Image (cartoon, helix red, strand yellow):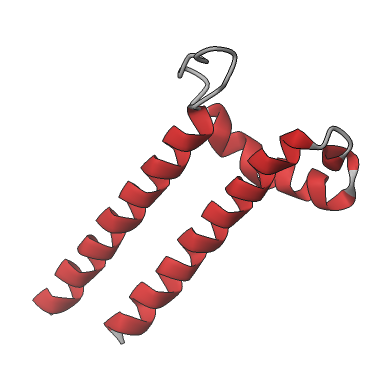
Length: 90
């Protein structure tokens, strides 16, 4: 049971991380955000990425998406640890 839950949570985090990566790569193609897929990714990725606007760009390059993806990985690790702790205590 716990392994299935951890797997599903992992897939959800991996899928969102992939969506963030695609969203960031779309910046190389100026008209990509105006497509329906681009608008969908904007709706699901932009609110999370806005949390990291405090990271200053260096040399004109924004590193906030990288920080956002690292934080997402740390959250996944923490949630998996929490799930294991909760279910092994039962």
